[in-house]
Image (cartoon, rainbow, N blue to C red; front, side, top):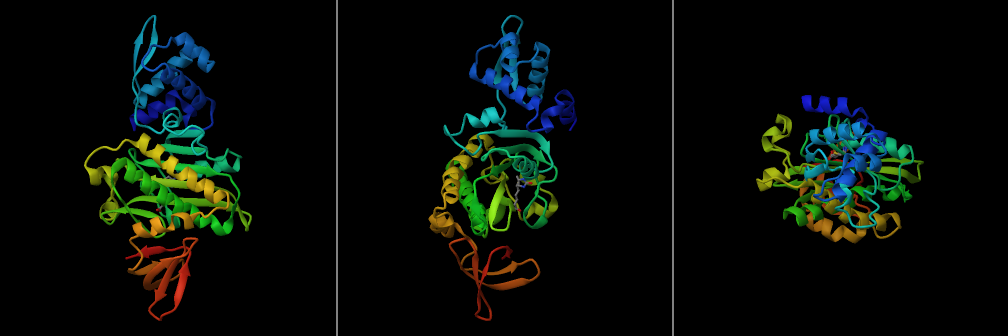
Length: 346
Ligand code: BTN
């Protein structure tokens, strides 16, 4: 924590995702990255970022504090020797496909209350479609149904601003598509095949490894904008989960017993999500197009489950999912109901 305080002191504007300090840091970092392993003079960096050499030096110090390593030589300047696995814009963008809309602007925060809250503020201010907010850690990570989301350093915490028009009736598909995208990315990047628990939890060995939270602003008929938040427990040691989560949560690194590289994993998620979002926003088949894949991975269907609704608990057999992602439950009375929002308890 002392390290964090120091970081805030030297670069106070980093907690403001669109602030000038963040943009100077981005320019300094981009100039260093594009030089590959060559030296870049302080003079060139100060020109690239439009600030004094003293300001450049402060940003270099701030970058060191979050894990970047440099060689510096009196007449040559600075040379990057190590890049940390953090979801900063200049690092993530170079892993994304050219022309990607999701993640075209990335705001990284060393710490924040909730990336969803920051992304919603940005969305309300008119941030571009696809803007991404990422954080090293969240103090008030938000989960579904008002729960907290445990978000220490090491996990993958990201929230997209989505601005394309979408009928309210199709909003629920966003999270279902997102769970498919994350599942594909985890399979491709880590070789793990999580189960999906309706509506959008990803489970490994029956424990939750990822949750998705969509928050929308709507005029009653259509979505004005949405924030799509992904919490993926990538590098979280099993022993660091709090007692109440120890039996029900896990992480990719705990299952694989090895560290996970967050940058390529985040880029894989973006690459999987983008075409699914494109299709949904264009009024395409949306969830229907991936329903077969979703059903094949789903651990809820065919089971006797209880579902916690807002006010009541219903029990029955999960017999299917409709084209928009509602869970079809055959109650013990024989009545079949469609559930649009709830919590499945096995
Ligand atoms: C769930 O309860 O299953 C959803 C959890 C979603 C957590 C993510 S972490 C990034 C984003 N910011 C938040 O505050 N919540 C989401």
